[in-house]
Length: 137
Image (cartoon, rainbow, N blue to C red; front, side, top):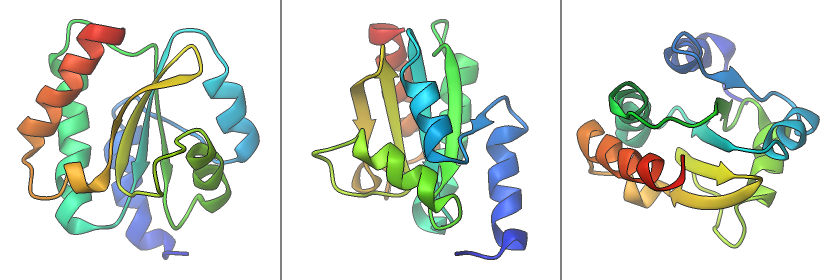
């Protein structure tokens, strides 16, 4: 578990912009079973990737005409039980944080793994997400 004083500012970057936290396995299940689209950001302390993932996600949501019905997040290494439950819905993909998933009617339709975030700019991540929003939202 990461210390709260390290995690909270990184959580706030998303929650201050309309993302709802999924803090328990029950909340994950309740959220993902809903009809419509749900964006899930598995947040992370990894500076090399999370430092562009969070801004990229926020850019995509701000720039896209079509948006997911729900914006959600859980923090790897902090909201451990919730992240573990999310990852059951991401199979066969291996655990990856940060990562970004788009679900439609409970089914995974788009996934950006950490290796697709590393070395990419926030704008590149946003462009990828806007295209997914246009297709699925």
